[in-house]
Amino acid sequence: MPGRTLISQEVLARVTGAPLIGGNSLRLLKDGAENYAAWREALLAARRWIHFETFLIHDDEVGREFAAILMAKAREGVRVRLLCDWVGTARRTSRRFWRALREAGVEARLFNPPQFVSPFAWISRDHRKMIGVDGEVAFVTGVCLGRMWLGDPQRGLDPWRDTGVEVRGPAVADIEQAFAQIWATTGDPLPDEEIPRRHTIRPAGDIRLRVIAGTPNTAGLYRLDHFIAAAARRYLWLTDAYFVATTSYVQALCTAARDGVDVRLLAPGSSDIPLVAFLSRAMYRPLLEAGVRVFEWNGSMLHAKTAVADRYWARVGSTNLNLSSWLGNWELDIVAEDEGFARQMEEMYLQDLERATEIVLTPRHRVRPSGPPRPRRRRRGRMAVGALGISSAVGASIANLRLLGPAEARVLAAAAALLLALSLVALLWPWAVTVPAAVLGLWIALTLLVRAWQLHKRASQPPDPPNKSR
Image (cartoon, rainbow, N blue to C red; front, side, top):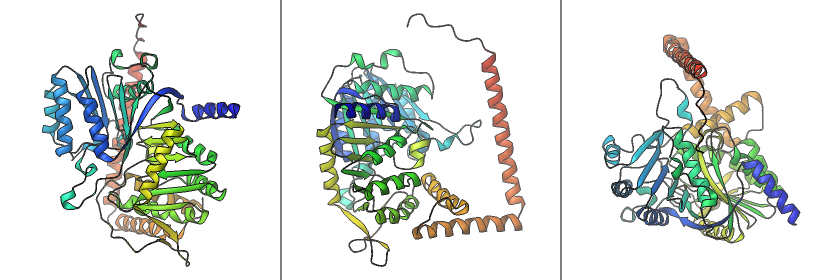
């Protein structure tokens, strides 16, 4: 057994690109109330620096409360860095909100705003949610800043269901270094004294974990998710907000279930992105036929991204089970290898199932909730992840790459209707297609020329002299 454990650790390190770090403590934080309380305590105690990274901030009472904390700490002399995704934050905050932060001394940046030289760069987003304080404590979570994570009891709105962790110990250095990496892509890098190293942080517990800092096209967590699906022996329980998995991952889950592994998926019952919820349900049939148990959350939005397997391995973070998260975005997750923490995750999962409805196949082989129909709340939201699912189904149909389920018939019908409409427009009003295509082609050509000139100019410059002080 020791040899097998050693091999597993080596394989996981290669699969993820993240070493196993010992000497840490983890505190499991459920929903916005627990996360916000822990964040508030850590931020108010900050003495040297605060690194705050999130996908979105709402300009509501929650966003303004934490903005006030950051501004107050900046006025005290604490170095406060705030990084938010441009797409996530657009239309949710005002210029006045950001101006007040910067005037108070907060160095606030937006990740990947629109640029003329990068017409398709908007596809890659900063989807991470983390906080680092003084190199002593860090948070990795799925929670952003907004009142929906607290709910509204007076209006009968439950808080969004979400999960995060508080980390103390040497792994804090890896979380801070992940922030430093993406911060450097948006402007001047962090000073060296704000990037702690593992050996400078005292052990805070006995939990071993990996910090998986996902970047576009690295696919570390994608490989890990496949590996865990193949390696799980007893159970693999997943919670995911936007489940639009690849065919290979769905097959991995189905294979595990057929082999006797207790595979479960907990997904939202009502989503803030209705199209993604529709595509998620299109994937239920092959899972159910293979023996995977599927549940839908009965409360308001389920936003958590977690997994637990075999009472030993557990994951918490920002990565959803879809290509946008696995391959396109900057993501951040912690993966713990600890029986005690996995047991906590297991207990939380079972509690969540008490507020969920199991999805089953009826005698007529239809996908239905096991209980009476539930009212669904329609929400408006982003469409990018859904587009990936549509393209997957359409591509599989055209190229005959895989068997399609009956639930995907509506996806194909919608895609056919859209293509038919575009074709009719092209026939009746050709200029409506040729002019936008010509403009787009000209834009791309100019951006390529600008990028080529920038690379040529960089190549002609002499290299920077080495820094002998390091």
